[in-house]
Amino acid sequence: MPSMLDAVVVGAGPNGLTAAAELARRGFSVEVFEAAETIGGGARTEELTLPGFRHDPCSAVHPLGIGSPAFAAMPLGRHGLEWLQPELALAHPFPDGSAAILTGSVGESAMSLGPQDAGAYRRLLAPYLGHWDTLAEDFLRTPWDGLPRDPYHWVRFGLTAIQPATLLSRRFRGAKARGLFAGLAAHAIAPTSGIATGGIALLFALAAHENGWPVPRGGSQAISDALASYVRELGGAIRTGTEVKRLDELPPARAYVFDTSPTALARIAGLGNAYRGYRYGASCFKIDYALSGPVPWTAKEARRAGTVHVGPTAGEIDGALRAAVAGRDPSVPFLITAQPSLFDPSRAPAGRHVFWAYGHVPAGWEGDATEVVERQLERFAPGFRDLVLARAVAGPPQLAARNANYVGGDIACGAFAGLQTVIRPKLARVPYATAHPAVFLCSSATPPGPGVHGMSGHHAAKAVWRRLRAV
Image (tube, helix red, strand yellow):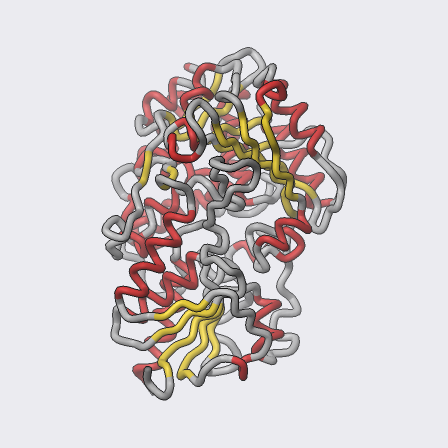
């Protein structure tokens, strides 16, 4: 081992591991320190309920993972990562038993919205189909970091994406299209009238048509394990069960890269109030289920989808998000659910299933939303409760305990609101750099933000190697 490492990475989530891999493959010596006993951060798999039921405590479905330029540049398949594509990426059921869907076919998806909106949906997506690779590279980054690869589509997509989802959805006349669009925008965990929420919806829809919304075989842990295996192949070391409280506890290095919240970085690196203006957002109430059979959705399309959005109308969805952001208890939650064992039998014993659902609640909320969540599920899948063998419940305090980056239970590691939507963690030419010349931030608090895609780690690594080479 060299007397001084080139880089030390704190946090073995997808961004930390991506940063480590990017640096190691450029010849830098790298060591990763993880506080938990296992790697993964927001991409882990555990037996949370019963033996043989393998749940994802955090993320489960990965449209931005399979479409990530950072992941695409690494041989993760050789290290065990295999993507499984559900028959339908997404189903959004309605009380009448029908559903809007997202599939690889824009036409099929458009027709599920009804004849009054099929054309409008096609027109909205058509300009960007076939351009995922350049759009992903141009938008999953800091906007001012160099010229875009495809300036025409960058400008066109950007002018559309900056709009609130409520404004973009005015292109649609029916409740189905507006409901589908609001559900996609809700992944931002912010009211759908917020700036750039339309871009979130558009990005997720485009991802479904271009790359699908897949699950990794064996669970989300497979992503982290593949990244870690690649880091080790490149000569990097990973140490788990090692909590870092101060910078001087780490071995000497030319650079320190933190896959942590800005709050934790400031505390560990002694940066004081460097991120005092950074805001964390609303949280979630998540339930992982062990089921005796598949979810009995009324809508047949939902029985073939990897992800199901539960909460039919744009008004209901926006109301649920506004309640969470305003600090009110959930009453009729909008639910994002995933059913990976329909497509990956390794996730549960034969004939059994794992199922995952979360609704939005205020940051730090300590209540129990199990009843309101299951009432909403029963609305679209009567008899659901009869299938429950066991459940693992996690509100904001439990989510924060599972992953220290989820401050107050905020799974996005920062509010999707106001200027922070596009400028995070604060206005800076290089948002990954800090006031300490050797300290960098690579978590989802940095551009392009939340999601298991490794792009924050990728861009932070670029900032690190530019500095190391300059020095």
